[in-house]
Length: 411
View 1: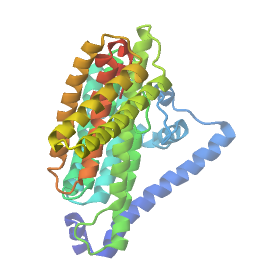
View 2: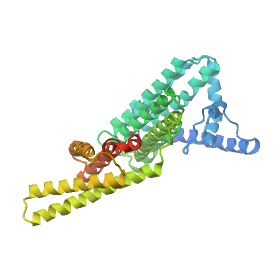
View 3: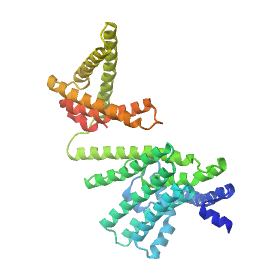
View 4: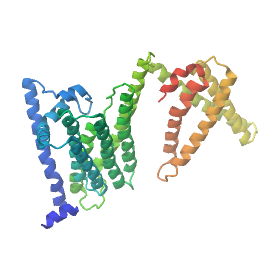
C-alpha cells in the first residue's frame, strides 16, 4: 500500500523508479516489436497491407516512412475497432486526446517524465482515431476538423510548455521554446497553403514523428536517470534534452521547407518560372564577399590615415566612407550587375546601411542582456539574421532595383 501511495506522489526509491518506468516500456516495446516482426513477415509473403487513408493522405517522411505508417494503423486496428464499437462520438475522442496532452504537460513540468511520455503517446494515438471515426460514421464536418486541428496545437504546446517549465533554469529552455515555435508554424504553413489551394506535406518532423520520438525519449529518460543519478532531485534528463534540440531544429526546418514549397507552387500557378538556386546562392556569396572586401579596405584606409597623423575620429570616418564606396561599387558592378541610376541607388544604399547598423547594434545589445551569452555568439547570430532578412533582400530588390526577382527568396 505504501508503494502505491509513493507511486502516485512520485516519491519512489531508485529501484521502484526504474521498474515503474521500465515495466510499461518493456511491455509496450514487446508489443510494438513483436507486431512489427509479424507485419514484416506478413508483408514479405502477401505484400504490405496498405491503410487506405494513409495512402490517400500520403505524408511519409525520412523519420517515418509509409511502411511504418501502414504498420502502425495495422497494429492499432483492434484498439480502433474497440473505440468504434463503444459508440463514443468523435468529439469525445478529440477531447480525451486534449485532456491527456494537457495532463502530460503538467506531469512534465513536475519532472514526472515517464508518465508525461506515456500520456503524450496515448494522446497522439487517440488523435489518429477521431477523424477516422467521424468519416466512418459519415459525421465528418469542416468545423469538427477545425476544432480537432486547434486542440492538437493546445496538446502539443502543453507538453512543450511543461518541459520548458522544468528546464526554466537551464539552456534547454531555449530548445523547448524553439520547438514550441516550430511545431506551431509547421501546421500553420500547411493550413495557409491549403487555404491558397496548395497541398504541402514536406519536411522531416510532422506530428506523427513528434509524438513518436519525443514521447519515446520522454518515456525512456527516467530509466537512464534512475540508473546513473538516482539521488539527483532535479536531473538533467539528457534524452529529453537531446530530443528537444532535435525537435527544435527539425520542426523549424520543416516549417521553412513547407513555406518554400508553398511559394514555389504559388509561383507556378501564377505562371512564373522557378527561381534558380545556383544564381541566387552565387549572388548571396558575392554580397558577402563585398562586405568582407569593404571591411578590409575600411581597416586599411583607417590605419593609413592614423599613421599619416589624422585623428582617430576622422580616420575611422574616412575608412568607413571608403569601405562603403567599395561595397556599393562591388555590389552594383559585380554582384547584381545593375545599370540603374547610381545616385538614387546610393541614397537607398545609405538608408539600408544605416538601418542595418541600428539593427546590428540593437540586436547585440538585447542578446547581451542575458549574461550567459558570449559576445561573439551574439554578434554572429545577429549579423547572420540581419544579412539574410534585411541586407541582402533590400540590396537585391530595393537598392539595385532591377534585381527584384531575388527579393522574395533571400531566406
